[in-house]
Length: 117
Image (spheres, one colour):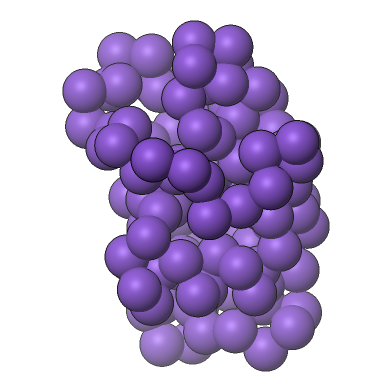
């Protein structure tokens, strides 16, 4: 199945991520730590901390693109590169949840914030 994203690029925008969540065309995975997730998160994202990705790989739907995100983009880029290394259509949301929030997109729970890492 061809990707809905440019497979020559590792990064996707928050706008592309929001659209993929809305139409369920990609799985979004938050690789931040639990305290960061608890402070504020993107509705519809699955939470798997970066260090637990390998042991939780069975929870990831690899039949569609996977978009990883973190606070600013470095942890999610590492995750996307690792998953691409084993043939999975993986991406990193550029700018992370900080950019998502800065562009006015919602966080859960209501009043959620982007926690420092």
